[in-house]
Picture 1 (tube, rainbow, N blue to C red):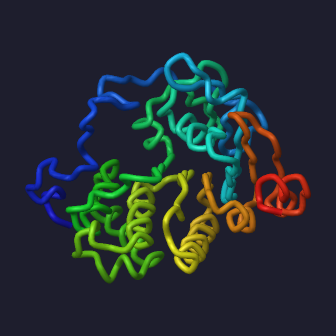
Picture 2: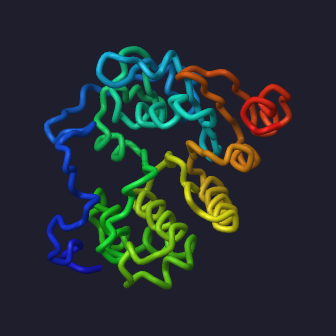
Picture 3: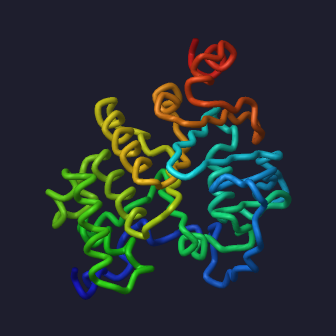
Length: 276
């Protein structure tokens, strides 16, 4: 592993710069207390979440939950609040009502940074790699919460085993990879933190059907290791086929909840959200 993960580049990557000077997180944010969870909670639950941007609520009592090793998929029409719900779970959106509980603890007051330390990994839909850094440097960036070199190397080897195409291009700039390979790097970097919950915001956006199927296969492999998956996905039918539980959101609220198979078999869901 290189001693300077930035390779002397400074902040030349556009993904590191916010030209508008606005955002959802600030370095000055501080976490509040961690409180006890509720008996019988699933591993993760974002319960009765209400919140939005400025004074307008986008989430209206939305609830999402996933147990250990499960795959939970969030689908719904454009503007339903799917990505907003995931950001709320990760702490990027302050809740006006509701709570987020993980592993038996109420983490509603934690910042996103501290939620990573608590066991959450998050892969946004866009700007999710450092393009001018090599693949390996991108993965090193994900290992920032670890200090033991052996642990970092073990995590990196696991990522390379999961994504062989990424391993072959470890010295190449991540921005030169195909769209599917860049997504693999982004997921790999999140796995470098050693998450217990991995959140993916539209991981197959813009990739070919073949690459989509490959990514879904890798997501299944990740879940089999005991990591919980919470995923927003535009390819609803294919995502529900691998889902243990699915949530259909409409206007920031739960419209349908069930196993992936149940939602695929529901005639109303099929007609309204899956194209018949």
